[in-house]
Length: 336
Image: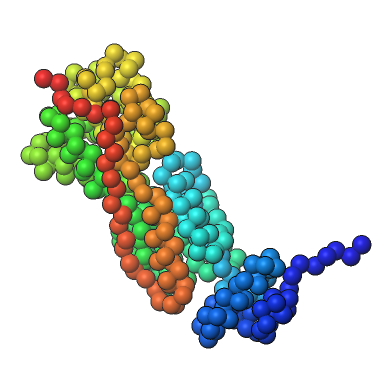
């Protein structure tokens, strides 16, 4: 039996009462088409269920309607949420995505991954780059194809979209100091991550604003286990009444450690996190935290990339997204 073919461009043209060249112009976004004709063509496409041949379209437009994303390959909430938000924003804009994961996160591995995506014919690349690089070689690559770095290096001649981590950490620390705590202890994320370094900076600045010498930081690795270990150490110090965790997972570990040591939250120790993971409001007690608007990160990253694709102009735009404080039951006034 001969398989039934799907609708072709000529079928759309016949139903819309136009030439197949006009249908092609509408599909490829050509400006020299009247709005009435464009509407008829789209109605015919919808009625027939016609799906354009992307390979043929790429030959006409010189574009693949595909965006490359360089991901981290890890399962941490921030990078994963960023990846999903970028993919969603690309899909909404009519683009498909190809994800590449570098073998490591040094700059040469990132560049190799971008080159691989470039060979696959992507129109541009978004690099989710939370780990420190000097940004120089990646910026050079941005001269060859449209490119945006998310949480990327502040140095280098390329477009960057990021959440204002310093402002978020400053808000978290200021909230605790405003509750009467004499100082805020910080369990920081791993060295080499932009977010971790910026959150330490914001934490320090909040203490400077209040004229307070900050206590020494403790180190974690973004996991609840490392938070538990740091929390166990902090629980032995009766001077600790407030803790700012570098992310919500470590905050969860801190809450558990304090419970094991017989410390009440927030009566004895207030705890605040960073990220506002979906489960944060169900922690015990519900976690005060800093919310990152990952959906906005995706939208802005794709907007800046598509503007480069459409105009052919390289962008060095820096777009910073303000986080917000979400107050729940894990923070309270300092004990008298």
